[in-house]
Image (cartoon, rainbow, N blue to C red; front, side):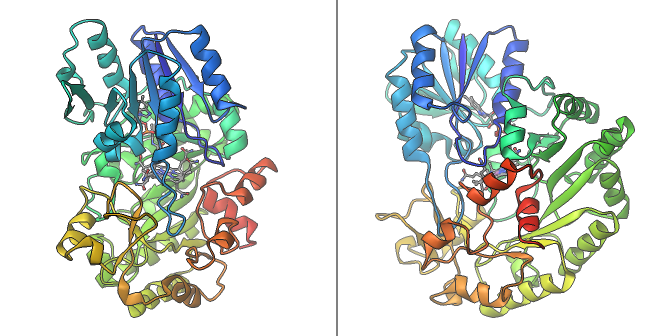
Length: 481
Ligand code: B12
């Protein structure tokens, strides 16, 4: 009745967790669902053709995870190829097409327009798609479907995003081949919550997941971890925006994991805000199996932290590193270099401080991907005509359009900002440096030491040989750091 298609074929492959949850919820509602995973298929078109030759679903749901790779100067935009895929599917079936996914939700309406899809769902797919199927079968009152982007008489309508406050997800995790993803992708995803109430100026997560945190019951999270463990998957990457927001929920999840003791057999990695983090939480995380934390550090100079609206101080970064070290947790600090007001001096302050506090590694990419609907977009608009704005970088021509990969790099950093950062890093192996604009072909083969995971052959090869874990941790080890 429903076909769900994963279109994300980037390597190393990341399992379509969203489709796994959705298929579980749809089946629980008594609806038959077929999943087509183009990432694990040898020939995507052939797989699609043979499916539609023999099946006539009532609705085709297509998942779109990454709209672009958010990495300057790679700046790969995936929307045109995605539109091609939609066109191909359209030629194989008369069923209506609905798109969803995190990449989709950031730009929802624009992607519906661009691809000519019948529908889109912005936000959580689990209940919205069941509701869409019901409306298609019965009254066609599409205004009742949360998150739905729909057409009527040549107009496109957008309902309120689907961000239900109560969050309970299926834990069976059997709609996609998680074990294949584990073997080829090095870890599997799991969510403990959705949404983020932080106000970081650049972030797209509130656009896709909402500004309220919506928490899962810790025992449901532990059930799911155990389900994955029973399949032979013992390394996870949490898919929360920030695991420690709110702290109380993070602590409760850790306690439950530790109580059931998969903590001894399970290793997991997560993204975290720098605050709140303290000795009690660090210890609980270690006991629950946390192997590594990637902190949203952004900067280590007060003016840039203020610009990004981060509540932490540089001293909090130092404390986070100390707490991780004391608890045997690997630690990465992710920076965001080149934002509004960045100068050679602020860069130096940040990079030198990170060297001093000595994390296991630090991400030092250059350029901030600007999204409509964020404070960054408002900052840029306030700077005057985007076409004449010296702080904007892009690889497309024509008018500036934040739907396409558009980056902010403070013009104060001069003509060769990436080289400026490389000089400050000075071959320190703890840093994943920026891609260098002048030699992108070298960057693409990853010799510049960046941490773009988009078609990263170094990672694919390491995972093939048995490496497991967060990609930054695998790359760190490969560099002998
Ligand atoms: C965790 C994470 C990672 C982990 C993944 C670990 C793992 N094993 O899963 C790692 C670190 C590997 C990673 C890598 C990358 N990531 Co990432 N990642 C995330 C994060 C935090 C969570 C994604 C996730 O799985 N969520 C949980 C699932 C359940 O949610 P979901 O996929 O959105 O699905 C729900 C809905 O969208 C919807 N839905 C999904 N499919 C469908 C289909 C239909 C038909 C419908 C109706 C609904 C629907 O329903 C689902 C259930 O409610 C998001 C940000 C965020 N907060 O979401 C960024 C995010 C997706 N990543 C992003 C990027 C750019 C990347 C990289 C390309 C970075 C890079 N250059 O290396 C790579 C790509 C890797 C790959 N192969 O695809 C961006 C994409 C932005 C954009 N412009 O498109 C995001 C949004 C972060 C950001 N704000 O910049 N990532």
